[in-house]
Image 1 (cartoon, rainbow, N blue to C red):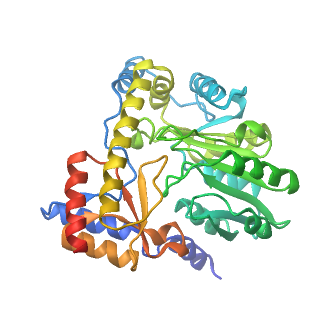
Image 2 (tube, one colour):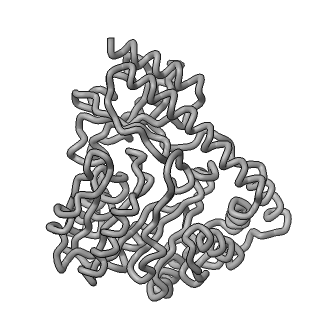
Amino acid sequence: MEFRDINRAFLNIGNEPTAIEINAKARALKAEGHPVISLAVGEPDFPTPEGIKEALYRAVRDNKTFYPNPQGIPELREAIAVYESARKNMPISIDRILVTVGGKPVIPYTMYLLTNPGDEVILLEPYYLAYPYWVKVFNLKLKIVRLNEDGTIPFDELKREITDRTRLLIINYPSNPTGAMLTREDMSRLLLLLDEFPSLYILSDEVYSRIIYEGEHISPLPHNTDRVILLESFSKTYAMTGWRLGYGIFPEWMLKYLVKYNSNLLTGPTTFVQYAGIAALRDPGVQKDVDRMVLEFKRRRDYVGERLSRMGFSFHKPSGAFYYFIDVGVDGMEFSKRLLEEKFVAVTPGIIFGPSFSSYVRISFANSMENLQEAMDRLEDFLK
């Protein structure tokens, strides 16, 4: 294969028909003046809390505009360490924290350091679409284990897939797209896998860990600090999707390599945005704003669930995140296209979350109650 062919193959990764097609069509229809309501985007519709914005303004006025520390400014890493130590009930050193441009870089950084071409990565299906993309980029072998209907892990099947080339298992709780939570029983069995397979690491994606309606968030991090990596983001919890701020908590040995990698690739997140991140974690007013957002998400969840149930759909009610993942009984991509073209409602085809879910769609309730009511009316009319 020539160099240009390799580049072309790399550029084509992930270009299969996906939600991008639906989102592009929705934007085009909206630009033409059609009354499009998008239930496809995983983004809070709330404005960023005022305490965070004020912290950014102060940082700019105080000339916090120079190059950042490539690991993240110490003040933010200290705030993250205090915040996560309290939530995980364990001491977390700032030397284990890498601040990133959004949470996504933690995925390739982890694969870059832990794997070689041909190594195996296991995904639990349905999964977030960025995971298989990076598996392909790093020329790794993808293994898929479908979750049980209630979101729990089929451990017998999972164990059968683990070999001496398996380096990484990626978990995501609360789940995108199902809103399922990790149970204490499943967490305990995951930790036993780490004991049984010494070359296996777990990447725990916890970006929805504050958006919970019932139960409690369970993380594997407190119980095995050597082979669990945590991925977190400010985007969902604090309505900061456009600010691009996140972090990873890694075993200490990984940091000296990842800081160099981060420095040469991105330098680091924008300096004054990092100061806003400190306010997100420490400002009591911001924390109250988060609580109010979660209460409103719960109200919307209950409303959309009641409407979907009346339409005849069966589903597991999400305990966290802000999505319903429903089986529409036909091709989900075609369903999504027709719903958008005929009723101007955008939803996400389930196929992008794994090949087993071609008849599913994901519906986001991160939208105003007024829009949700109108969208449900249109969906009901579409089904008739």
